[in-house]
Length: 102
Image (cartoon, rainbow, N blue to C red):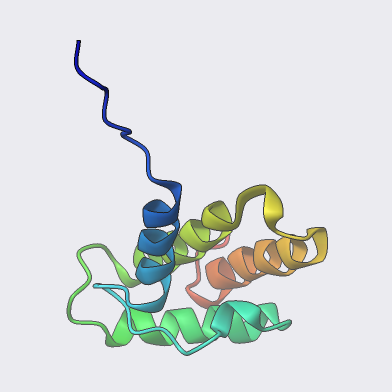
């Protein structure tokens, strides 16, 4: 009988997702933008990064929203409620600055 290899490596996974946030292949993000308390500033920064990128595959709106949602999901349950509220407002603001009111 052979020993099973461990498939899930939490430390490696955590490093991978943090690396994506800091060094996205599609967007060049402003340093620490997700730490801002201003939802409008977060949205404007993401919009500017997405529109300036020549490496993204989706539309600027979808790329910016995907990065924001990725960050929120990566934080998961450890995201404090106030940070979650700021980032959720940033999603609404991102829709507004791109003209995607719905």
